[in-house]
Image: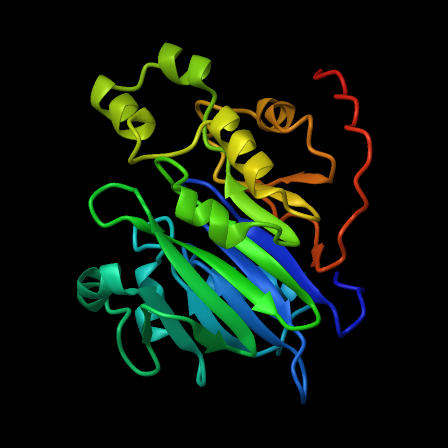
Length: 275
């Protein structure tokens, strides 16, 4: 249940992984809070159930920002279930696929410059991922805080680091452990896709990017591989983080993270034994 002040900008990851990705940002607005979803990789029914469990029943969904349209980030059920007044935001590079997937209709908008979404200033940069790339977003709420959101990246371009520099909260993927990836029974073509610069970030690449971005508050680790990673290994790569680290899951929502409430820099935590 969400028990933070109603004027706080709050983030919760409902699910993250190859089985479906969706996070919710609760945005204070005149007349009542609004919700912005980051990806819609869960079915509308499952998403609504998780929102209800999070204490958000009846709070309008104002927008859905899609990083890309792979099946684990865009569930086709949303094509016929978009709530009234909700707009879809897709990157210009995904316009064609979004049209074919039924994601461009009604109040859909294509982001190729700064947008105002529910009072948030939204900026995007395109990262490398498979053929069409992936949109990474920076969302700024004046007087409340800022969020950087990046997942499914083959590598972290300097342009993304510059855009995200100093955000209050950073959501970034920490997909795989290189040793587990190399020793897995996955086919070689899949290993090359994941590790070849157009797939996903390793734990170490994630930690390096986070250090360069230097968020003032929490790091939220996204899209952990169920076969080639563990929460312990992902967290261990970020052990030097001076601020809290939240590791997300495919199977249960994360704790709520307050955006814009930076934690003072402190000594890195001691890694608990992994039992």
